[in-house]
Length: 508
Ligand code: ATP
Image 1: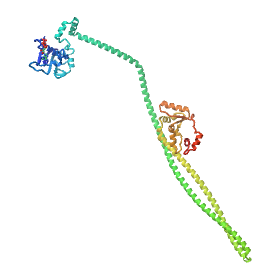
Image 2 (image 1 turned 45 degrees about the vertical axis):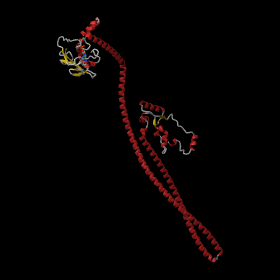
Image 3 (image 1 turned 120 degrees about the horizontal axis):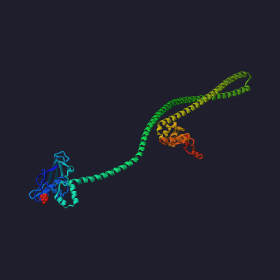
Image 4 (image 1 turned 135 degrees about the horizontal axis):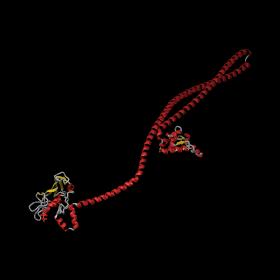
């Protein structure tokens, strides 16, 4: 590699485009003082990236652009191109000739760099010339100042310049740099070893944690599949129960319809009996009227008999003997007729008394029948109400089981495996019709309390809930529960209070 040519255009004193050829051997440029010889070496350093305005002997970078002369006006752009022969591929580019150009515009801020006429960055130029000995600080360019300082310098400094020229200092610098890098790398290595050491300590507990986590995941998976199985089973059982309950409800509805029919028939019977009783009452009244009439007639007949007796006595006393026998016969006939009539009426009277008595007995029987029918009707009503409330309870059970707290539901499902389970309070009690809302409101959440036979059972159920994290429930062991009573004096006051219907438990 060597510098073949330099082309200057508008750079410092080179207003016209000028080219200097460097042929093999030594090229010397001669001329009077101030003719512009040093401007050529400035141009070389400028192209190779010189940024120091001072070392370019100016006060501003734009001072490198031709500033004009008496007979020429200033230019606006300076451009210098260095042409290198690279047929030995000394520079890392696959070209026999490499042109490096720098261009600066007077009104521009930044210089333009080009390699083989293509715009590049300064860094690309620096990368290209690095390690070629062309660097701006290298000794490939020795200025007038350098020579005087070389001549004046001490032997040690001069040695440094020789080393620089021989390229040793470059390796020294690289060595120092490499040692520094080595030191930094050793530090890094030590730090990494420390970290590795630390991590190794953590490795055993981490492995244990990892094993635990894997075991946890395995068990979690198992639990999930068990829970799914349990749920499927529960759904199946619940569906079966639902079907049973629906059947029971259907049966109860059927019974309800049948009982309604019975009630209609019984009410019809009742109406018939009432109508019959009314008829019998009328008949009895009529017969009693007739009896009274007959009794009046008997009384009239008795009065007439007394009158006839008196008349006969009077006739016997006052009339002649001749007519007497005739009169007696006639009176005897009258008396006989009257006696016959009397006897006949008496017989009818007795007959009527018997009929009245029979009718009274019939009436009594009818009344008894009616009482029985009424009792039967009441019993049917009662059993119908019971069936209705049982149906309501079952419907409520089917529809509202889901309203139970999760803990209560879990206990209901697991009741067969728990000892001493009696039932949920709300399902065990029977509330009288018309008081259901009042009692369930008063009991509130206590409707979901679970009755257990004893404390041991309750404890077992609580630990079952805790173990399965299935929620909470309140248990009432029968062995420890005690009834509470309202005090007698309070009861006395209550009973006299207007609107008092009874204590809650009176309706359960
Ligand atoms: P010496 O032998 O004294 O070192 P030299 O031949 O090396 O001189 P240089 O110092 O290279 O000469 O050139 C200086 C000349 O360049 C001066 O005449 C100066 O006026 C001229 N010059 C420097 N900058 C510019 C510029 N921007 N425009 C025009 N002329 C310039």
